[in-house]
Image (tube, rainbow, N blue to C red):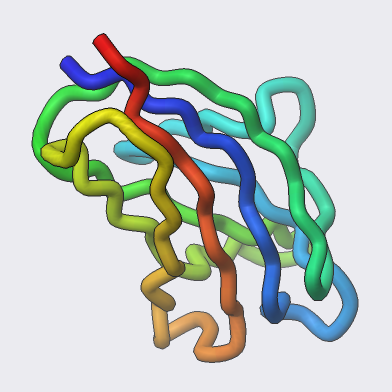
Length: 115
């Protein structure tokens, strides 16, 4: 079972005109941020995540969501993490959920920790 560390998320272009209110999920379960509903992020901003998870399987789909106060939250897209690679640092680009947003452009920095 690989142990991964999600280091940071970088916003190149937010979905909304000012800042996005984002959170992350795996398998329908919110994993970040732990102590609030969301974290705000805008153009060229980086949020440190520093989350370590033990995960099973060869691939993980990490969902990026945008919190909405007045309507349903929006699933902006997913990061696909290949866990078959060796220990090291990786970057993954958001695969957009085009039914919700073609604008959002995010990158995730993560790593597979040595066993």
